[in-house]
Length: 378
Image (cartoon, rainbow, N blue to C red; front, side, top):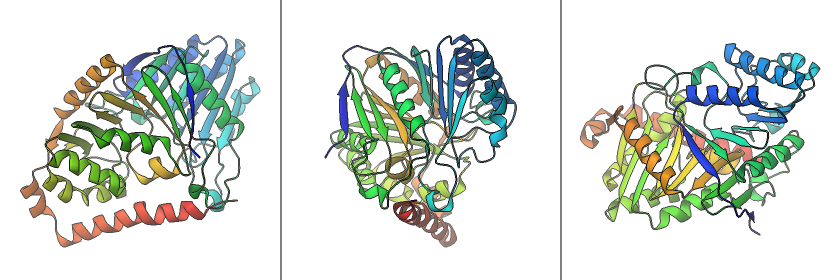
């Protein structure tokens, strides 16, 4: 049994959101301009001025008759009290927690980031609703990236939100990751493919990436949390060994030190194979951009066990030449702020303790975490 694939015949319009500040500003402007409906889905909403600004705009929208709904992950936004939404609910808005926190259902999370306004414009990317994403990612704020979309895909994104919103507190069955999930979906258009991933067999994001890597000659990846399965690491090494170009921009500064420690354990074999590894230095790297030949992936998914096997994720696979050309420009600009990892220098710096920490981090994130997620249910 395979994931559902729908076909949409018309083209969509895509525009890059070059950093978190641009993304948050344009999202807020879209909420202010909305006249019919607002759908906001995110992993994290941190208490603070940014969240309050979005809440005020959402309340104002409700008061002018807009149907506004917000979905936040129960664990990602655990620091935000439910009472934060009382005024929004009083104005007519609807708010729900995805998978409210429980020890028996802690692992499976909604990591998607999505805003749809009036079924006319949608925003996707890596940015959450928090002050950390305000800035250009160089002089201030986390380095992030996203995209605004117009056209038929917007309705598909709205439908994806509606399904998740309605089932926000559904109960996952035992051994969910060994099942084929009907919540995973692929929507194909002439120049893009919407990939809705989640727990269960046949994850469409992982499947599409493996397919595109098979015969690739050039791969350029920006990734906040780099813990790809061994087959994908093998694919990257094979591309480099057969003369292809593989460049990775990974974080030097991170909000999840355990993830960076795990990623460091892969450096040796990748560097020996000819993969070029760069670390982004100015700010915390949170962006996700995968450029495989002329194919671009943008969305919420990282290359790690959670994004490819456990969490609900949203990724857009775009084949439009203008999007690919602009993605190369984004990659090149970020590359200017990176330090290239030299194999000999890096090897000499790796003490026994550093290697041991990397292996421990790898086992926690790539083995123990998926093992727990496999068995959690309610």
